[in-house]
Every structure is written in structure tokens, then in C-alpha cells.
Length: 349
Image (cartoon, rainbow, N blue to C red; front, side, top):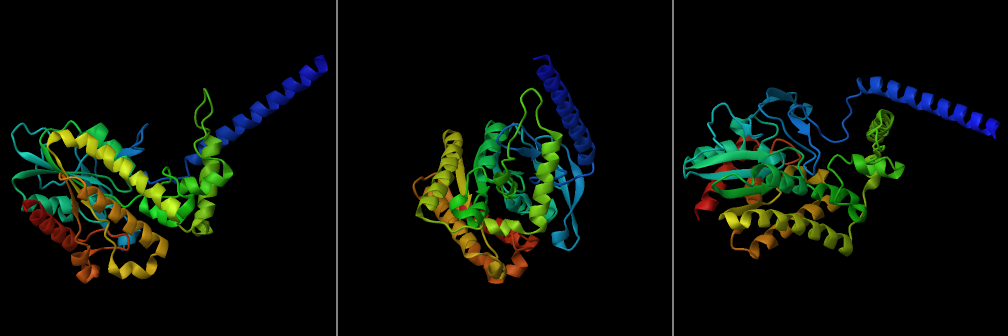
């Protein structure tokens, strides 16, 4: 018996030493491994809720992105975690009766790829001096993250007359994963890559996240990207998966609507606009998912008098190369100004 206990103790000690060494080595290796399993940019910070991340307060720096021919664009945030410009004087705590217009959603209303002065909210403010325009969008945000952020950060703001929502996630994910799509799937596909390895959301009781497991996740993810294995996840959609997708969208739209309906607020749902010049780069599954998202938004608005559907995709695509800066549908300065002008006409009706 003593021999068995001795062997057990020695084995346990060896295991503890091996695990400790792996943790220590992984800890130092992670210092040099900047792989992100989802997009955590310099101007955002992680949260411990369904937002996953949110904008940092009082951030002011230039963002570099190789997708835009190496150009940089300025990102400045306020103490209320809104994107702002040095040229505007928004006041989220304005005590007058001046009404507010809140943009929420993803990188399109945020104005990713351009300075704040070339973004949709900035141009819209120029056309609507009678309103206080707030840019509460964040790049890469899904519909669920957007609703969660509104609930935690914006729902108590006074005098919000309009809320403008633009998101394309989870349409991208549904377009890629089809029948295998899960509501928890993120736009970076990290969960989908790690799922077959059973490495998602592992936390050790009384210890937390393992440095070794984190390093292993990042290693697998990098290899998958390098070998372009992500394309292998593409699956067809079917009627049942469509219903699941639409139900998920309606669930989140209803959650947002219920948070706003008692505040005399008009909810504006924007279509997700796809540049005509990128049509050859889009799969049929992606096109189908985006059209289904837009139809769901439109149908939702038709059932409620205080919800509107805003769609100027045809106008933007008269000259798509002038209106968009990339295949993802980010607006150029011209595209943002046109959208702001049409949106102004839209709400004045």
C-alpha cells in the first residue's frame, strides 16, 4: 500500500512540475504572441458580459490598416465610450430639450477606414444641427453585442429621439457555416476552428484560464488561417437553418425594441449594403444570408409604426467604387455623405 501511495505521490509531483513548467513557458511565449481569437483592437477593451468588448474611454490615436493601402485614420473616443471628432461638440449629458440621434451597430456607422470627419454620423450631424448625434457603434459588433451594449451603456440617456441600427453579423457567419451555424459564432471564426478540438471556453476551477491552453488555441487558429482551412467550414443552408437564423434576429430585435418602446423613440433599421463591385467575391450562401437579414429587418419594421426600415443600396451602387472603400461595404466619405443626406430626408418625411 505504501509503495502504491509513494508511486502516486511521485507521479502527481511529476505531473504538477510538468504542468507548472508548461504554464510558465506558455506565459512567456504569450508575451510575444499577439494572435487575437477575436478582434481586440487598441481602441477597445474586453468586458465580462455579452458585449465581449467595448470602446475604451478617452482614446486618441491613429489606426493603421493594410486593407486601405497603408493609410491611417484617427480614432478618438469620449469618456462615454463614443467615437467623436475634434470638430464636434456632442454632449451626452445635455440638459436642454435638444433631441438625440444615436447610431449603434458595427463598423459601418462607426466609420471604420476613415476619419470621424468622413463618417456617416459626422455628416449627419452637419445636416441636422437641431439634433445631438452620438456615434455608439463599434467595429465587428454583432446584433447581440449591440443590444447588450445599448442595455448597459445607452438606455438611460435622456431625449433619444432616433436610434439607427446597422449590423451585418451574424449574416457573414450564417453564410459561411450554414446548417452548422450557432448564435455564439463570431465573425472571426475562432470558435468554429477550435470547436473540433474541444478547446472553446475552457476555464479551470479555482485557477481560471490556462496559459498553455490559450497558447495552444492561438497556435491551432494560426495554422488554420495559414492553411486556409476556414473555407472547409462552408455549408449549405436549409429551411430549418433559415428559421433558426431569422428567429435569432427577431429575438434580438425584440429585445432592443422592448428597451426603447416606452421612451418615445423611433428605431431605424438599416439594410446591410453590399458593393456591386464585390459581387464576384461573394458566395451564393453569403448573398442569401445578407438578403435574409435585410428581409427580416424590413418585415420587423412593417409590423410596428415606431420602427422604420432604411434602404438606399440602389443609390449607393450607382457608382459603388466611389461610395465604398472595400469589399466589406465600409463607406467612403462620398458614401457616408450621401447616406447622411438620404437619411435626413428620410426622417423629415
